[in-house]
Structure formats: C-alpha cells, structure tokens
Image (cartoon, rainbow, N blue to C red; front, side, top):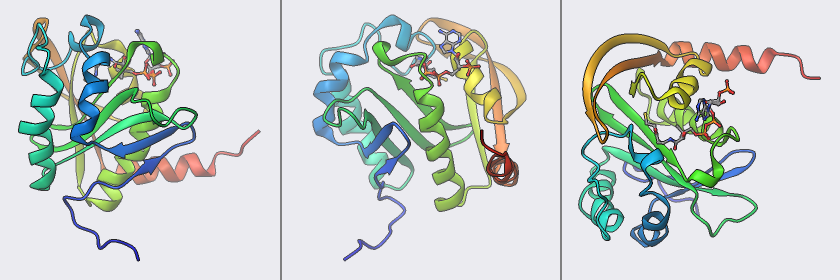
Length: 196
Ligand SMILES: CC(C)(COP(=O)(O)OP(=O)(O)OC[C@H]1O[C@@H](n2cnc3c(N)ncnc32)[C@H](O)[C@@H]1OP(=O)(O)O)[C@@H](O)C(=O)NCCC(=O)NCCS
C-alpha cells in the first residue's frame, strides 16, 4: 500500500544515471570519507567546520539535517550511481531558507560528468511540482564556476550580489533565481525539442 504523503517525508528519486535516496544517519560513515576535501568545502558556507572533525558528518546529520527534515523544513538525499547503488557519491538538499533553497556537493572522482546537473533537474522538479514552491533561490560564490554553470544552464537569473562568508573566507556572492512559471516553461520547451 502506498505510504501517505507528508511534507517532511523525503521520497526516493531517480535520473538516467543516478539514484537519490533520502539521507539516513547510517550514511555518515561514507560521507565522512568523501566530503572533507578542500576542493569540495572551499566555496561552502563557513558553517561547515574546517578542519573537518572526525565526527563532522555524523554530528551534522544527527543535530541539524535530520531534525530539519523531520520538521518539514529541509529535504536531503544522498546520490548514488545506478551501477553501484551501495556507494554514496555526493549529496543534494532542498531548504526552506531565505535566498538559500538548494545545496549540493559531489565526491571528487565523479566531478565533471554532468552528474550534478542531472540531480538538480529532478530535485528542482520536486521543489516546484511536489512542494509547490513559487521560486527557487540559491547563493553562489562568483569564483565557483562549476556551480554557477549549473544555474546558468538551468535557466536561472542572477538577481542580487552581496558578500558572504565561506570556508575559504569572505567572497563576492551572486543570488540566482528561477520561478515556478519559468521552470515549467523551460521544461515544456525542452520536451518540444526534436531529438536526433
Ligand atoms: C559544483 C559541483 C557539485 C558540480 O558537480 P559536477 O557534477 O561536476 O557538475 P557538472 O558536471 O554537472 O557540470 C556543471 C557545469 O560546470 C562545468 N564545470 C564542472 N567542473 C568545473 C570546474 N572545475 N571548472 C569550471 N567548470 C566546471 C561543467 O563543464 C558544466 O558546464 P557545461 O555543461 O557548460 O560544460 C562540484 O564541482 C562540487 O561538488 N563542488 C564542491 C561543492 C560546491 O561548491 N557546491 C556548490 C555550492 S554553491
């Protein structure tokens, strides 16, 4: 029997190459091995402790991420390749925070293969279609070229510029946004593009 939908319940999602599984505390061990690298943390908010403590992933999931999921304020998924579903390769989250609605990171061996672009499509669909949010806003350090490209490619607009504190210090930041209407129009356009 299908489980009744609750806004605090995070569903399994999938893309062509990826499985997105709701975050569990048991994922912390794998994340602890994968996440603490300078190239991953440098452009994340300075709420990420650095140097990363040995229990950093466990503590963050237990004290912050999972309680926020329970409150229906955040939705967290681990990313896995369909070809190796037991292995966590990264993470993506949706957040009901002002100007900060989506965050992600990917383990270094999987960078540059279009995987996060793929994950963003399905998670952003969820933000608009299931959570019925009117707008998605994300902050990005200007120097974070890969992350900015994901915003550009998905039809987002830069709406504000400010400075924010990151693990690597104070950096110029752009706020990118897309409305539900714009997202749906873009999706419709993509479906109409003839293939081959
Ligand atoms: C941001 C991040 C998740 C991107 O993941 P990814 O799967 O490698 O991204 P994609 O392969 O989907 O690439 C997205 C775009 O960025 C480009 N890109 C990827 N890595 C890049 C790099 N190091 N430098 C410049 N451009 C890069 C890609 O070419 C692609 O653009 P294109 O389609 O025009 O070629 C990954 O770099 C990461 O984990 N970074 C550290 C954490 C982080 O900064 N998170 C975001 C905070 S706002």
